[in-house]
Length: 399
Image 1 (cartoon, rainbow, N blue to C red):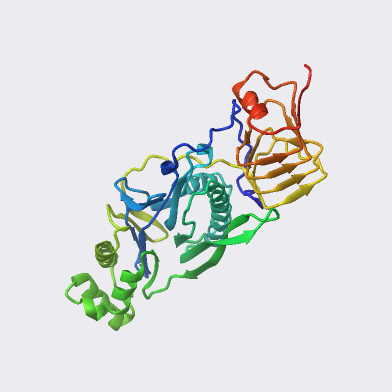
Image 2: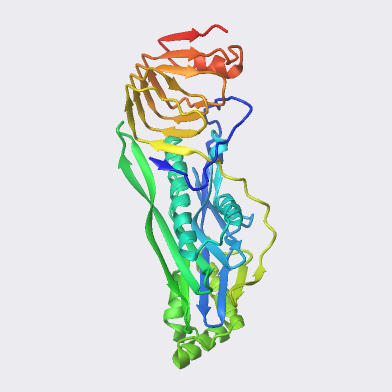
């Protein structure tokens, strides 16, 4: 069971609904693709990324014209870049649409309300936890909706620790598929690597996304000596392991690498996003003003479980239940809950007027539906709840 315990809050809506089955599968998609480059030495940090988005949908991959934010300022002394998973849109469950930008903006807001500055290691590990949770949730939901997607994710954190030490950190997540209690696939997005290191005098760098061109240039600069920025890089590496490279020289080198990468990979291109850090903080960001991304829904996730013989009531918290088995439960309350592709057998299912989602992908057998006193029995939601599933019996409690 995964819980978004760090910043979880209860989310309330004033309506109840159960969405229609998916009608336009073309709208369901996952967006990814990028190149991220971070250079750092005794002179500071240069962080450069592109803005291209690649959309993976039912008809394959395509590049879309709208730029995406891939460089994020977390506070006055750290930035991060992201590669891999960018966003996912599920037309039949839009409340669970997710954007990497929205998750990071939400996290940035949490940082701003802390009583004391958050250290570099804590930022890296807390973001690992948060993205593990959200990517696992959306991957399982998309799996239920039969939507293919790529949920690998890579984050680079650059900046200064609370004691002023310059540091680089990387975080990589990958999906792992297992078989749940019901025999269905369950996807967990787990932290594959997480590491950090201090920046010294000499040049150090971190790459993510389509990094192969960058590695070719940085490992074999003699093949690209007609480019001034590469020639200067080679000279500095030979003279002092890159400690003499200035901020401007590192910036020009990173820009050249992005251009060369875009020439080879269609998933890279568009406007560059650039940040410079020196002297313990951020001194400049070159980036268009992106509209705020939607804040992700805060919830708890339960997948692949076997729950038998006990009442299920989670008042005050919201759960997303995916591919679980509910067997012989005398009081399975669906108020405030979302259910996708679960098996509900010999249960007494209770609905009392709150927001809820019992998706048509759920399999219900030999179970009773109880409509509570506070539910509007004439509402569209209740009518569909009653008629869209093979209940053994429907009971309306008297007011």
